[in-house]
Image: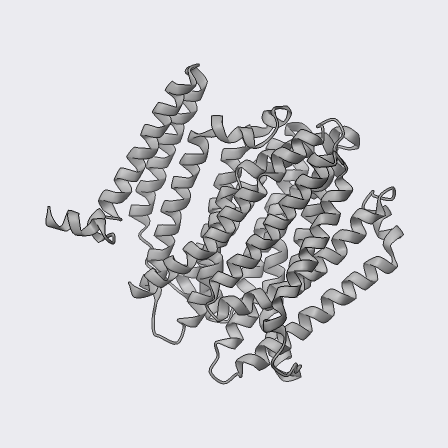
Length: 483
């Protein structure tokens, strides 16, 4: 239980930086959608290019972030030697990538259909290279259990980014996507200056023996990561190829803006991941923690299902995050959130093969999920548009999740409380049905919000009664124990 409390504390801090940061970052969505019209396709450009940068970030870190946690917690390895080797390896690859792209910039931009704006590609190539390098100092902060600095730097980037965007897009009325990319590059570079302590004070050494071992461990994670990020971004890369021209960019912009409303699920998953990964690897020498992993899975599912109900229940309010011209795409939000929950469950399940050093399984699972996702996109986008993108995510993540669960039962069985989890899923489906019908048949906003709030309250009441009794909470728990 002490381990779970530590996990909850770190998740809360990481979650603060992630959730508050993403919330602040949401300010960019109404800003961009208000300043950049749907017809211009400008927001579609931003959505597409950022999907490429997400894939590139995975390629440029090539599984070394997870390998770093695996090897730095091995008693036979010197922590700073592991850290230094990882820094040099990732930094060298990132620098080489940026140099190659800038050297061949006109050709690269033309291949991506941005021959008229190669500067977009150049700026984001340098930006993603710096981001890849920063992943390792950020991972070192997590290893040292310094979530406060981690959170502070993440928030610094976001606040600075938002401030500069407001200056250029509102005060100076510069409605050009060029400034979105330029500001991102500046802010990313600026944050690097605050890693002086993490990048100095030790000898930079490249241990070739250690690097070979880390690469052998990391390459299946790279495949897993590529497949995983394609599950998140392939639709945004494929869509403009199947729906060409300005119409394709416009529809992609609508889809990309609507997906932002669903990103609260990604915030929770990311916050949990930041805390859970070092937690699992640090505890691998403390005995069998499978019961703890099972509890963590259940609590993760409970909170993500609650988030699902909150977002769908208050969609009438949250939809104002994006401009009204983009509201037609909001029907994808519940589907995208369901896919994000499956992705989070898959992440939780993934530790069995990481702990037994069989990461090749992750490559197979993610590869299968990615193949399903791409197939659904290619087959159904021409007919169903961006709704096919949303359902492709469910199909892809669902495939990877189920494969990991059933294979894991053989190699690293964990007794997950499936019955209890199933009850929460059933309750969520019931309440979501009520919320959907309320939105369809009730015209009065206050009545819809009242019914939806009641559904959320009943879910919380069930959770408190069965899994989070008030008597176990600090301060107010003393009152309930006396009753």
